[in-house]
Amino acid sequence: MILLLALLVSGCARTGGDQTDPEQTSLPAGKDVVYEQLKTPVTTIDPAYVQSDSEVMVAKLIFQGLVKENASGKVVSCIARSWEVSPDGLTYVFHLNKRVLFHNGKEITADDFKFSWERVLRLNAPSAYLFTNIQGANEVLSGNQTLAAGIVAVDKYTLKVTLVHPQDNFINSLTHPAGAVLDRYEVVEQGVKFAKPGTFKQPSLIPSGAGPFKFIEWVDSRSLTLGKNTQYFGTKPAIWRIEFLLNQPTGDAVWDFLAGKTHILQDVTPGDMPPLSGQMGNLSLVEKPVLEVRYVGMNANLEPFTNKAVRDAVSYGLDPAKILKAARGKSGEVLSGYLTDYWYGQSNQESQESVVSHAYEKGLGAEMLELSGHPGGSGLPQITLYCGSAWEDQIVAQKIVENLSSLGFNIKIQALSQKDLRKAVRNGEAAFYTTTFAARSTELDDFFHEQINSRWQKTIENPLWDQLLDNAVQQKGAARLSLYRQLEREVVNDSRIRYLYTYKSAAAVSDRLANFQLGPGNNVVFEELQFKNH
Image 1 (cartoon, rainbow, N blue to C red):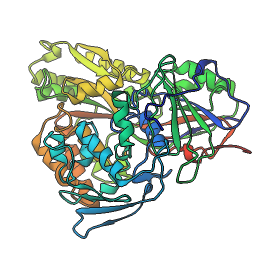
Image 2: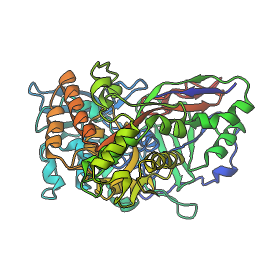
Image 3: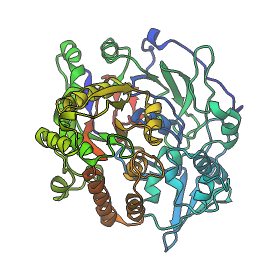
Image 4: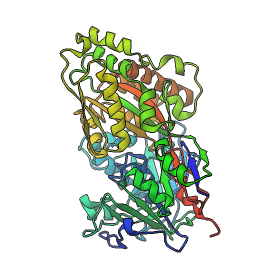
């Protein structure tokens, strides 16, 4: 029986080997290679730049940092065996495990962490906000310094970090892939080719992490291969190799799974079920949420969204229930409350009453258009809706166009790669877009910094909201979540962001596998996966 689980939940210039065409590869006779079809694109595995759930999952298998999340999402120690925090909450001293090795055999030291974190700042990477509360980080970001005064390698195995202000969730934030350690010499030698895909003729260079699996090869848009790290300092995985198959049409991926060519098919939606149901008489479906949300964004700095009434018309005119049904069926839930409460599993009476002031109401959408001076859409320019290139992205975009066309909007769809879409949003070039946010760490700070903080992206610019976020991250527990809710209210009520739905993720799993689990970030817990009777 196939169990269908749905859970929401040392030269530096080494090159990949074992280049085989995944389309011609069947499962081997041995029981140590897992084949998985990834549904979301993988455009980078550089920890400083990963965004999608697939990118985050792969990066976390290769690269690790001071702490990590376990299968249930709890933050536990990793390369740091222990740490102390000063009474004022400003100084953290991390003690590293000794004799922890990169995949290339080099020992990891505190200097490697200092380099890795400062690299994120020097690159002004999308995840650089993780470290801006460290003393001297802003000087590195501005280009005035290359080293952050608040990151100090005290000795080979001791890292001292000094913050500008207390941050109660600082440890949790370090579960973000950008908190991982890199081999500084290897990164410099590989240069712009670091963590980039290769081709059959030009293999990718091999980046060295410290995770339970090491990089073997990455053939762009086709496959990405990881192998067991036999030098791993923690519990070594049972799986010898993972073959991720990329960018295959969903229908082909389903049939390959049924033919036994793959063991895991992630993010199965009800639309994928007919061929599965037709081939198997006994299917089990279990669903739990993952930390991912679909939303629409509007740039108030670009026409016609400088007019709040136009933004309100869009917010009222979108029908999340119909969009969800078309894109994912029942594999998600319309988000009408606070994302904060959904993310942290909070039950808040205020949640259902206050955050969404623009529930679907076509009549109000028409009224807002008339109030804007564009009754029935008259006088409005054609609007470009930016979306990703995946099937779900384009279905969502088509439904948005249908919803808003009935009000009089004239909208065309522009599909971009995930990388180009992120760039267009971050640089403030996209006036209207739909995308998703998937968990990078246990903390929702990532969403607020990446999507709302005007320092990191120019689609939304509001100094008061920036200050509210700065105040929130200095608070503890309930006080911090209360400020998050306040920030959400202001952003949603101003029609800068319109929540659509949260995710339930389904995975079709071969009955040959045991201990299959999905983490809260929609990540397969390969560290604990094994074959039955192995």
